[in-house]
Length: 202
Ligand code: CMC
Picture 1 (tube, rainbow, N blue to C red):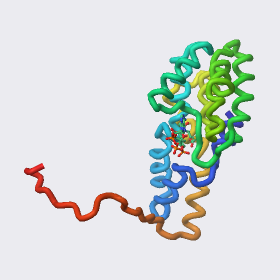
Picture 2: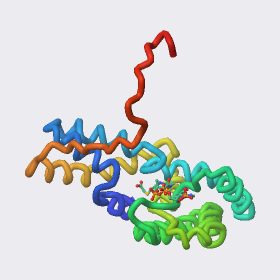
Picture 3: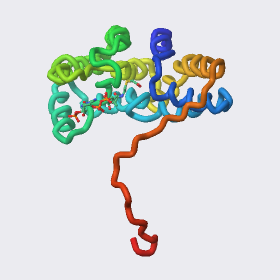
């Protein structure tokens, strides 16, 4: 857990840290900013991925089922959870540390199945995706570690949040110290000059 918390503590302007900073930039309280960050973290594209990876491992059940499982998902243009990252187009350096722990814990607990499923997925099944810059991320092995530590899967996001609170807080303090209201603008590329259609005629 110490290694896990250290790895999760801070990680640049990830989605939840950005959410925290946006809230802090309105001079909202630290508690409110951290609440906003928790909301952003919860999504499966961000901190919710570890829970989804564990669900996926349970659905796969055995390493020999991994290929068919992944093939079905990819053929339906679905994503394999725990792979890909907005910034890293090589292996997420945090994943290496968790991979070692996942393997060691699996052996210690006499339950190496989750590690075997995950390594088969990453080393064999998803190997062709490396060419496209899709490698394992921090959430890929985290779920198996929590599971082997006896933590229920609906607590995976709260565990991630616990680890990330120092990072969110540091980002908020930095924001308060030299504040500017964060207010991005979006560039509209949709249809222009649309007619207004009254509600009853739609
Ligand atoms: N499985 C299959 N294909 C993928 C995956 C994946 N996990 N991730 C990206 N791709 C494909 C995607 O389909 C797209 O293909 P195409 O160009 O043919 O449409 C291409 O790669 C680029 O995808 P993108 O969404 O534009 O790329 P991104 O860098 O913005 O995606 C991501 C980042 C994390 C949203 C995405 O990789 C993803 O949804 N991964 C699964 C969820 C996950 O593991 N999230 C944890 C992220 S890291 C830890 C954290 O922040 O909590």
